[in-house]
Image 1 (spheres, one colour):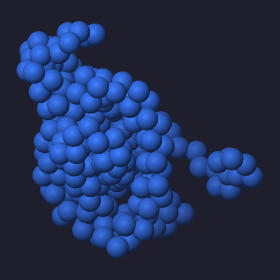
Image 2 (cartoon, helix red, strand yellow):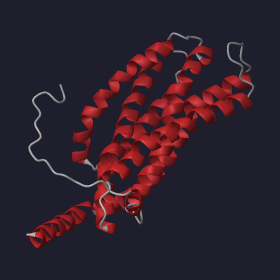
Image 3 (tube, rainbow, N blue to C red):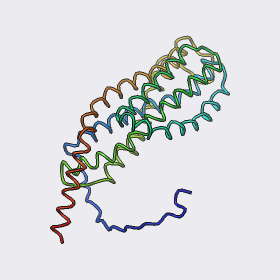
Image 4 (cartoon, rainbow, N blue to C red):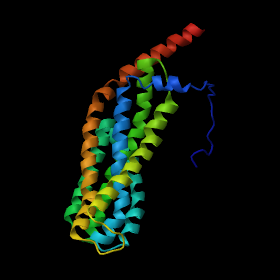
Length: 253
């Protein structure tokens, strides 16, 4: 459906950028640094939240079937994704990501206080999905702006390298830590799979599932606050780049 009827009307041939030149595009690219660090850390929370849900449902809530419900409800995140353009118009991209983090944290905290009430647990989980889906989508769109910043700063446009590292690499690295950190916390608390868990182990599961993501959301929000000033520079950067491109085009002619 995405490509039905689509035609490429402008065919531009661009030579591949050497790897060393792509690296130069990161020099002084502070907004890219901010996004990469924030996205890696965010994916620790995302991986932790989704991965530990099975343990929380089984051992803390005593309802292993909830895991399927949690996973199935993830599809509701598309609602938040559809709303993102409207939120950005009212605020901006950085604020939209912060709103997503705040909503996600609220859902997590709510889950900590609703006990085993199935309805409230599901409501809290859905709220968390809305927040997480908003926060997780924003860096993908914001990476394009760091490509402009890199070209403006260094004269080198390296969209492939900057977006690949800023997305796929961050997801892989963050997900790895998101599996490693909770497993170490739970192991240190004496967790043993498929056994009756001690109070200490149950507390560890509770912490990693609910409070660890909240802590990480707060860290990511603090990092993203540094991005505001770079987002304010975007109109200036786009204008200057357009002038450069126009000048280069005239010179070449």
